[in-house]
Image (cartoon, rainbow, N blue to C red; front, side, top):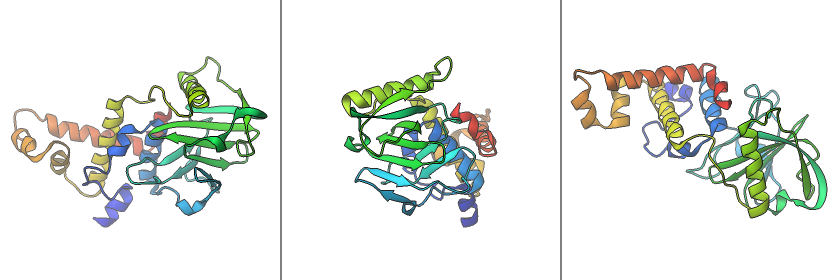
Length: 258
C-alpha cells in the first residue's frame, strides 16, 4: 500500500480536504500534477531556492530538467495553497514572453506585495507571480526584473492567442492596481473535475477498488443504493475517470497546456 501511494504521487487521497486547492488550479498546474505521477517526482524542495526579499524567491535551474519544458515546480508555501509551477514559454502559451528594458518609473518586481518565484535560465528569466490561485507567468527573453524598474516589449504570437492576451491583461492590471485578476484559464467546473480525476487515480494506484473510489467520491449511502441497480452509471463514471487519468499520466498531460 505505501509503495503504491508513493508511485501515485499523492499519499492523502482519503483526505477530503487534500484536493480542495486544486479546484482553483490552472492548466499549467494540472499538467504538472498529472505528469509527476508518471515520473514519480515530487515538487522541488524549498531549499533549492534563495530568498531575495520576503516575497521573491530565486531558484536554481535543474540539470537536467525533471520533465521536458518544465522550468520549476515548488511545493506550496503554506497548507491549502497551490504548487508554484512554470513551464517554458515555448510549451505553455499562458507564459508571456517579454523583453525588459530599464525605466525609472516602470514595473518594479521588488515593489510588489505579492509572492514571486524567479529562475535565471540559459535563454530566459522565468518569473511566476502569484495572487492566491491566480498566476502570472513571464519569460524575460532579454533583460532582468531583479535589478530595478523596467518597461516591457511584448513578444505576442502570430494571431495573438487568447492565453497570451489573458496574461497581458493580467500584467496590465498588476501594473495599474498592484494585484492580479481576470478570467480563469479553466472553468471552476473543469478544474473541480480534474481534481476529482486526480483523486480517483491516486486511490486506484493505492489499491482502492472502483467501489471504494465511488464511496470516496459520492458517499456510502448513494453507492449502496445505486451500485447494483439497473444502471452501471457509477461504475462507469469511476472507470472513465481512471481511464482519463491513465491517458494523461502516461503522456497526454502536455495537451493540458494547450
